[in-house]
Length: 193
Image: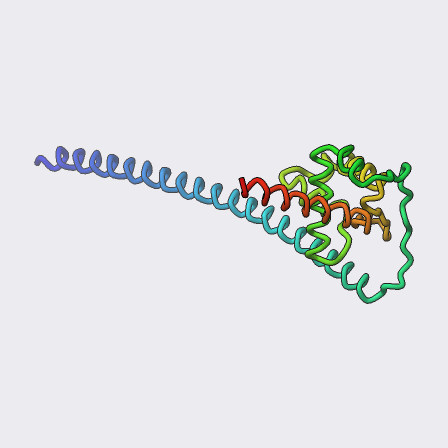
């Protein structure tokens, strides 16, 4: 007799249960979609990183192969770049004419040339001297500094294929060693007092 009353309560309970189930399913699918989107962005970011690493490795490989080919073919034709100026006669005068940055660059080239026993490319010098900047932004500055050092006869610029290399000349080495010797003597006398 009261069957119709219970049937309506049962239908309402089922409807409420189905609405809750529908809400939870929609929410779950929305969370799955968000997770898939975040995973796809991570995959693209990692893909870009792998591409950059691959490019760096290819560049290093080409540099190593270039060095090996240079070591194996020492009779290869080298083109000397002209130095844009006259050589200064007095080495002490030359050192006083250089700015602090130019002196630092000369000493850096000398140190790396001594350690590696090979001339340095202009790109390598830029990476050593301006490590935080891109080569394109400092190329003209480095070239100007190298031209000034070459005009004083402290370094020699050589062009092989597409690369420009610089190394310290005998005059530059003598000047650097004299300068380092004087600094050591001045330090010893200052320590004595």
